[in-house]
Length: 358
Image 1 (spheres, one colour):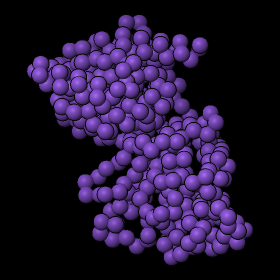
Image 2 (tube, one colour):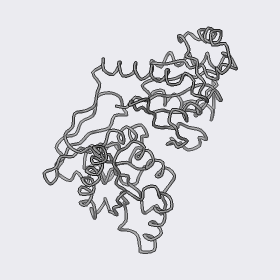
Image 3 (cartoon, one colour):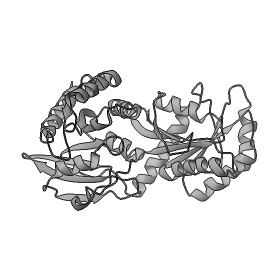
């Protein structure tokens, strides 16, 4: 599984600056919860040949209540999701009560943590690192997120220790036979229905990966003498519950699945009448990961000609960077067009393999 690193700290300590440097992009998937104005952002990072996920969080001040308390709760959700936490400090402000309160809760979380002393440009690192010792979290790594100073060394240390911990625990990728397929998309676009429609009655194996609650389910199937593995992020376990299932959208599961798959099926909801910003961002993550892509437009059967033409224009306008990808118009509920997806998956997979080998 890809390591997940959460960035936490007071407001304006440079978390977003570090996030943008690590992901080399301002594009991020946002976990938006009703009533909250600032939540978690997720992005892909890579150090050499080692990929990882980064979570940028809202600022903590300690002792939050009301709306601020709800926002703070989302920060600690990110900590729970992460394999490691980078606690950022502002070297120009020094250590204050908020830092001490965050440090105390971070210690109680049980998560591996790393102190990063940011904005060290032109400052006495020795004195500031010594000051950070007062938090009782060990030695702080001096960095300058805006320029990149010290950042690679910090991430190298985090990844090395997280990987060592996983190896010691016996965690690793699930051994699967066949083309791995990630069915991804926004909530309620029909991922669950499509997953189970593709499985039909040929489901032969379903199991959870050992580890945390964010793990996806890997489901093996065979069709036309070809082996496939569906990576299910929607939490569908029994066909009898498909119609009643409420899809839970987990950004961590989605990004992990994209990176682990050979082919991603990006499912869009034609009935909604729009291609959203989150659709576009998900598409960008798929391209960035190098995973082969097939665009699946679901709920197509319920649209008249005028609405179909409108949605095609939306696709061209909002996703012009996907002009290379095959589009398939389907109804997961009724099954129309779903059978063609396996041929599309084979074509996308073979094309990706040619690119890799040339």
